Image 1: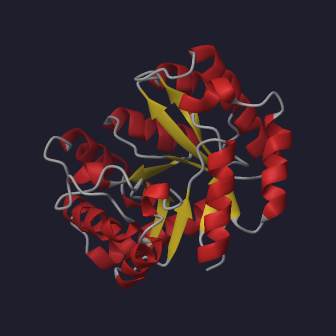
Image 2 (image 1 turned 180 degrees about the vertical axis):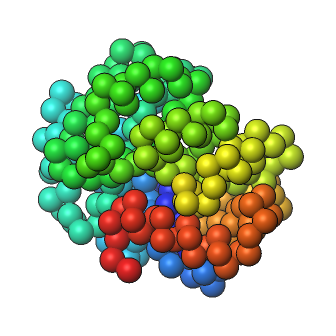
Length: 258
């Protein structure tokens, strides 16, 4: 399995990161992508990725858009120069109107800058979208080139119709995490059924959103196995098929060696 979206560089793991990564390996997690949310966080993600043989992304989360540098491309190039082989994507980037920690115009500007950078550098994109679907889709229609770009809608929790738009119109993968195990998540389960297994990758978003039966605990990459088991039940497939296909999808998404 591949945990396509984690934050194992988070300081909350500083006391037991090695043990967390050992548990992930024991659970069958072969690769972990630790995801940057601003320049400093992306730098730390890269440092931890180098120390522990992980993969990383560099990105500016919509919450942090108001603090983005004027030259996003230059800042990202400087980060990638440290360990280019570790950087597998740009993100997480997107729009978040639920909290609006940054003004909407700043979020849109920084999203466009990261989309342009990813297209020019031929890197996949990890997207965050919350309560901003219409504006997000409008920017994708303006900037996204399905023929040459790949991306994932991280922590997808939308409707079946939204899922079909992301997959059918834009060729995206949907990142499925612990939310699918929640009792209230039947609309998400319907969306997963609507697009099917070939459109899915697995993630934890750890330390957040631990799946059942770990709700209330700190999430960690090993728990992606619980999400895989739920996806298997939702799609009436074997766990082996779920892990095989989602791993294949993640390898294609991030252009990883097999």
